[in-house]
Length: 250
Image: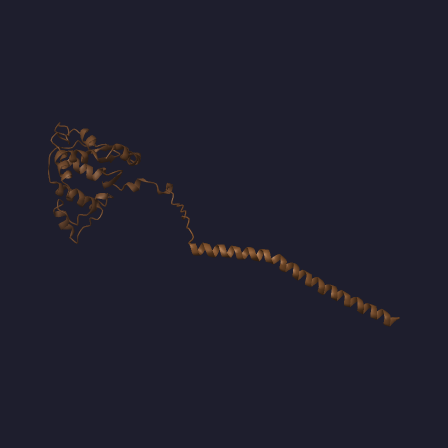
């Protein structure tokens, strides 16, 4: 996947967030509380993992306020369950929690173990839960930084050749003004060729019409002549009647 293919999509993403970095760039800018810099890619890593890390984009508006620890306090599934339970309990809008709903458990049981899933894991959460790449990312970045990514950042993963899909964060469509989107479509139906039978009928109708146009003036002339003869006969009869009346009067 070339950078050129992704540039139009990334331009749109960058226009919506204050900061947009690859996961590698994001990790390189972090210094842990223990004084150690985050190292996400090692020389022994496969090209597949390197491509994955460079195809993950981290978007955020405010920079990291608290210095994270490098300690690994729980596994990725436990961290994912903790984040999902917290998002649902606080009713925060996050793509990660889409499709995750609490089962019919009492409130006491929900709060008993926040590191266990209390609903079905679907969509983005299921993708992260079953990904070996994300498990390695969690091991390299630690629990604090991975939690920050899932809870407070909008993370997108590249989809070749030129798309991205969002795995966590507030929905990107919340940042897009729908009033500027045009919903007008211009459909131009393609020209349809007439069949041979239709063309023949059309030609026949045209010839018949032309014949009528040619014959019509002749018919009108004949009719006009008949009307003139009738009128002349009528005038002649009226003249004869007038002459007879004059003769009788004399």
